[in-house]
Image (spheres, rainbow, N blue to C red):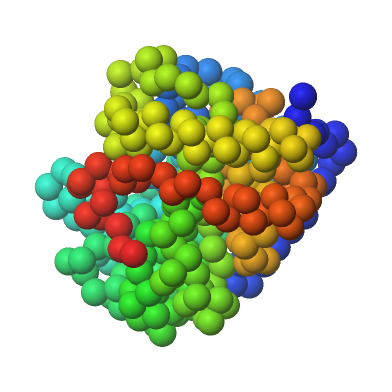
Length: 335
C-alpha cells in the first residue's frame, strides 16, 4: 500500500519565478505519446486529470509535439469548464511552422506565432500560463525567440516564459530580454546533471525549476524488471539506460531506492519525488502518468518526510549507467 491522500487540495503550492503552482505537477505526455499504452484509454486519462485536480495537483504539462497535437487536444477536452483550476504549460519548437525540414527545431518568431495559435485552439483556451521553448534552437538567437514570446505576453496569449533543457548562458541571455519564469530539465535520483551548472543560475536569478522524468521514466518506481513488455513504439526501447548491461546496472540502483522506501514505509516513487522536494522551494516536479492510482500515489509524496540519513543515502546512490537519450537527443540538450 502507498501513503495516500483523500482530501481535496492536499498538495502544497510553491512559486516558480512569480507563478504559483502545485508542488507536484502532472506530465501528460504519456497519455498520448511515447510510452506503452499511450492513446489507448483516453477515458482513464481524463479521469486521472480530474483526480489530480481533486487532490490539488493543478500544474499540468504538455507540448504540441506530443502526438503530435493529440495530447493538447485531450487536455482541451478534459479541462473544458475547469480551465481556471489549472496552471497549464505547453511547449513549442520541435515542430517547424515556417518551412524547415521535418525533424528540425524551429524557434523563429514566425513559427512561434503559428505554434501558439495552434496550441490555444487545441487546448480550448484564451491563454497559456507557461509557454516553454522545447529545445534551444541554435539557428535562432535566443534574444529573438524571447523577444517574440515577450510580445505574446504583452498580448495576453501567454502569461509566463519558460525554457527546456537550456544551459546557463542561454538562460542568462534569455532572462536579460524578459524574465524567465521556469526552466524544465530532466532531473531525478539518476539524472543529476543540472546540479552543477544550471541550478545555481536559477537560484541566482529567482527562476523556478521543473524536473521532468522525475521517476526515471518509470524505472525508479521499482515496477519495471524487464523491457520485454514495452511496445514497439515505446521510446525506452531505444534509450541507452534501458539497454543491456546498462539496464541491469540501473535495476540495482532502483533496488537501492526500494530499500529506502521500505525503511520509510512508502513507495519507491514517493521516495524519488520526496527527495526532489528536498532540493529547494523553487522546484516542482511533473511525474507523468495516465492512471488515477498513480496520480494518487504521486500526489501523496508531497506529505512524505524523509529522515536525514535516508536523504544522505539517496544522495549517494550509485550513478545511472548510460546517457539519458540517444545521440540525437543528447545533441539537442544544453547542459
